[in-house]
Image 1: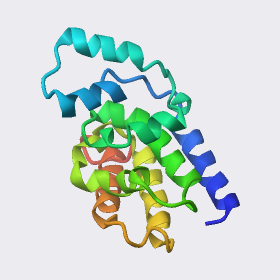
Image 2 (image 1 turned 135 degrees about the vertical axis):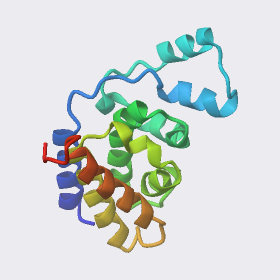
Image 3 (image 1 turned 30 degrees about the vertical axis):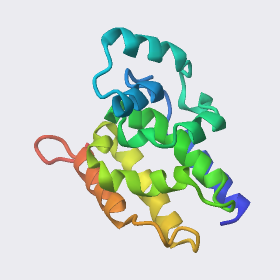
Image 4 (image 1 turned 180 degrees about the vertical axis):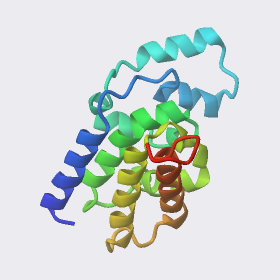
Amino acid sequence: MTSADQDRLIQMLEETFTAIPRPDCTKRVARSLDDEWFPTGERVAGLRLLDQEMDWREVKPDDICRFSDVLFWISPDGFRFYFPAFLRHAITHWQDSHDRVQLECMEVIGRQPGVVQSLTAGEAALLAWILTGLSVDPKGGHYDSTLPIQILESHATKAGHGEDGSLR
């Protein structure tokens, strides 16, 4: 993937994922759900205060690496907020040695399909398109991304139709 391709994908993410509300289940809250299982309300409130980003573009690269395992534990609203940051990081570092961030971006949806529930049709379609492009890249061929792409495409189709089956 060329740097021009990377820049175009990142621009598409930034143009598509706009005004995403900050979730109640922040990255530290998701980590506590994994580590502690049932954190108290007081603990959750304290963890939310530690996660200060109000926009997904504010998530620091060090935090993305440090919290690369939270996507499995995060709420659908949290996924919608954090996944663009994780995917932007994965794209930016696509030519480097791959790490947990790329793995999570390419495979977490297949292991935790409910995380896509908060995505709009356009967001899901863009993510499916990006993951498809990354999966056919030589560095992306070893990931198990078929199911995540199918889940995103299915969600994009369902989210793009109203209750009566009409297009939105």
